[in-house]
Length: 328
Ligand code: BYC
Image (tube, rainbow, N blue to C red; front, top):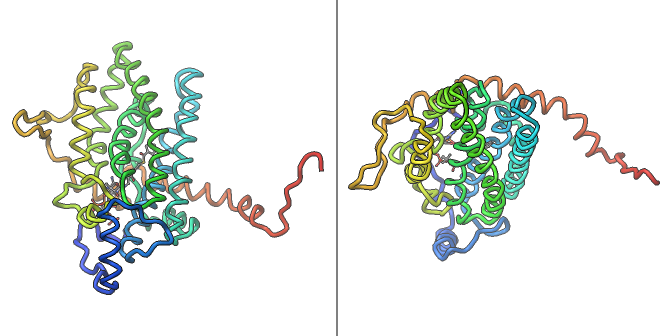
């Protein structure tokens, strides 16, 4: 079982009662005033644990997320798209580096994080456990998965933990290029031949449920939202991010003459809220707990990368390692 298997169970022991009440009150007052918490500052153990969990999962999502798109570098249509795809994948791996560094400031080593990933102990985003069969799948990831990520990350970049917020600021700047790249590639297919349009529509149908899952379970089922919103780690709830995504992107999808595989999907004119068929949350639980179509394959790739890179890390960390310049 992945992730400890307690998904959706309410947290019974927070450990907050063990904290010094005066320090806790001052910590919460700082957050209330909009101050950033920095690594050397006092913080409750639960804040530290929650941040490690979330930032680590985010970092893992970036390196695992590079895999489905990475397989399309050599198969992308044309040299220009290959170059752009390669740059995007490289950016995603760079995001993981920034995020692992941010999580390390909280006391968990990068080595431990990678070990927990490849042993299946840590989670990563549900969405990267689905296959990218066609080039259209890859374009849907580049446009809509990055769009969903930006909605979440722009909000959280204004949060309380300094190193995470600074990493998110930089990531969002790069993600906005990905969004343009993905949109361009989608528009190209949508305005292309009937076969290209069909391929795009089929990809959209495949990715819709994983995209709805991407923002996390509905607020009423979410375990961590309450405390994370209180401590300004999450600046918007799962449902708020999902609504914002629907608001921004459903009209753009429809504008291209594409459809979405949910007959109930519409914006309620009175409430201003999008109404939709609840995606299958049992499927979501299975996928995030290790039983999705590609979980085993994704982790196997990471495991191999770790094993094959071990000698490089060992050599670099060896006290005998010397850097020899060509002129020395
Ligand atoms: N996938 O209480 P909840 C990218 C888990 S990568 C998997 O609502 P929380 C990109 C959750 O962990 C960007 N698991 O949780 C890269 C918890 O389980 P545990 C990815 C999920 O933390 C390459 C349980 O369900 N973005 O953009 O309050 C190429 C209960 O959920 C998911 C981030 O990582 C999920 N989707 O809220 C292209 C953003 N959702 O830990 C693109 C950072 C929930 O108790 N993370 N779970 O075992 C977050 O903002 C929040 O963690 C979430 C979940 C909104 C995802």
